[in-house]
Image 1 (cartoon, rainbow, N blue to C red):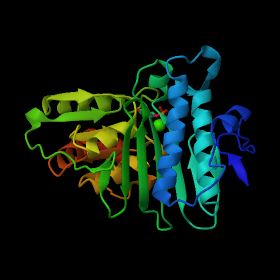
Image 2: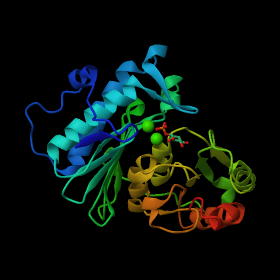
Image 3: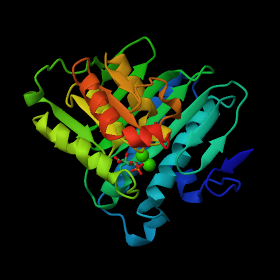
Length: 299
Ligand code: IPD
Ligand code: CA
Ligand code: CA
């Protein structure tokens, strides 16, 4: 049974999405990584077609300060049909509601458009994020695609991380005065705003600069390839970070929750960095978010 995970209703792909995404009419058997790449690139083309020309009727409120567009939905339909056709035995967890259960124990975790607010504002930073976790919950495959730059970040467990086919590594910078650190600002929940701002103040003192790009998947991909020295954000969902976490780890980086736990499947807080930056950010997070961690509101 396929359910819309927000409304508990049967999920039906829109006619528009069914016609725009030609999910391999003549299907050639591909492996997991190639399937994820193909799906991400098709979704990326869909997004680019509408980028900069979205009109108000294509934007719907989903929650307080949280929006979805027809493009998010079309991308999700495209990715879901491509993946479920190739791997019908796997389950799927997609942000905009496509959720299926499968018999394999494996799960695809999909953010069809990460950076929706940027997309709505024609700010050219958004991505498609697709991950596969195995029966033990370990991340097996991760793809983050940034269509505006045609940059494809890929990783498979134990096989390294790549940008457009070239191996990538996390940064080797050691001097905080040179660190460029990415973050996600609180925007709709405020109970941790003070903790966040006090940590931000400390990171400002301990870095050359901070960026808030607006796509957690890109923040993680850029950490994996050394553009950023680290990334932290308190409230995220598995579709935001799963692919990016595998990228960072396969590129030699470290990822944990704010409590230091590396089993991040259940965590909504993320610290990703290098051997130099991760311990520093983790110390700060434990200090500034101590109350929240003790109350076990978030890990
Ligand atoms: C958002 C982006 C953003 C992060 C938010 C996410 P969306 O995802 O990743 O950078 O700060 O927490 O919700 O809604 O654009 O897919
Ligand atoms: Ca997201
Ligand atoms: Ca999204």
